[in-house]
Length: 129
Image (cartoon, rainbow, N blue to C red; front, side, top):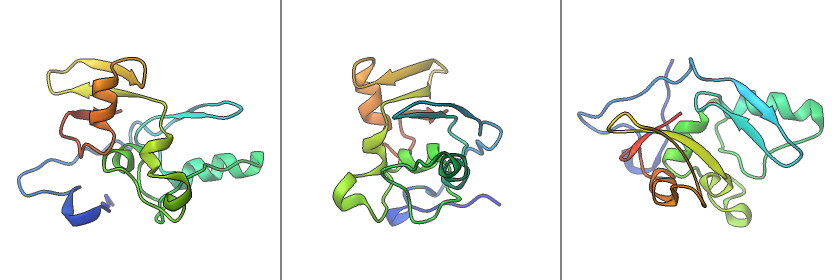
């Protein structure tokens, strides 16, 4: 089952498309203060991976079966938003496939224009993978 959760229908617009990223759901690496995952990984899977290691994320959505890519593409709200900001605020780097098919790694320091536009951009500038 594909699910969507966003404010005012951002995630599912008439005539829009939805991308099922469940085939891209690997947890790639866990660092001392970071984790690298594919966009289809769910917050539940990430939490299940981190908790046995005595770790958690600073911000999580209220509904953990949501995907990482989908959540950060609409900003990502949760109970810690008042202290930690949007979930998208915790992202340091991401890979985006643009409308022209270009695969781009973007961060605050590399392709920062795309990075800022894709975070909470509602999928309007590309697909977060």
